[in-house]
Image 1 (tube, rainbow, N blue to C red):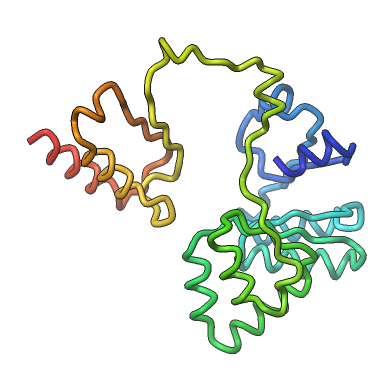
Image 2 (cartoon, one colour; image 1 turned 30 degrees about the horizontal axis):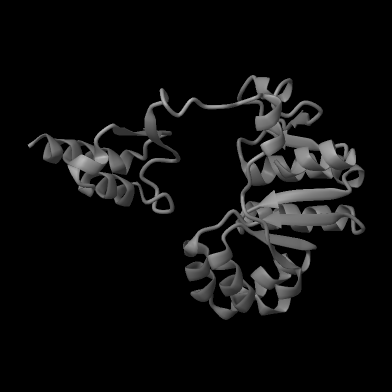
Amino acid sequence: MIPYKLHKLFNYNSTVACYNLDEYTYLKNEVEGLNIDFIENKYNNYSLDGIRYLRKNAKSIDILQIFHITMYSMLYAFTFKKLNPKGKIYLKLDCSHKLIDRIAELNKVQRYFLDQYLYKVDLISVEQKQLFDKIRLLLEPHKNKIINIPNGVDFTYLEEKNIKYNYQVKENIILNVARVGTEEKNTEMLLEAFKNIKDDCRQGWKMIIIGPIEKSFEKYINDFFMKIQH
């Protein structure tokens, strides 16, 4: 969304760099003008393949957007800044409460490396306002470059597609798209909450969950449906 909007509104030459794992048909329709550059899967390793890509391309990149506080994103930041000191790095945390817990549990050595990583970053965004203030307190040396950017909806796209609903005939559906069973998505709470709604309130509604299912979550799903059948 962000690289596309920078292209659409400010004429940026925006490119997504990734492995070639799909046909990416949406590039011609939903995000027309956004470029894609495939990273060679030489080592089958995010860190090594990403570093190799940056060694070839860092000097031609003005702004590098990376995600998450991970080993590979840290390596990307160090590699990029070494090869292109004038380039800017934008870190989109895309985080949950788990990040706060992990940062709070870091020892002095781990915290030192985290700070060195974040000193390389020029802008950091947090999606949830609830987490924004907590992260600024935890990352006090970096608080002035931490901003709140909620995940948004492209209303221009909706208008262009003339998407409208006849609420008299549409189905009442709660749609959840996620990595089903991961701790961050808390699918258990969603299922239990929907199950516990009184029948007269839930009547006429259905819930659809879409996404890859964690292997460890399959037993919970089977047990859940066995219970509600009885």
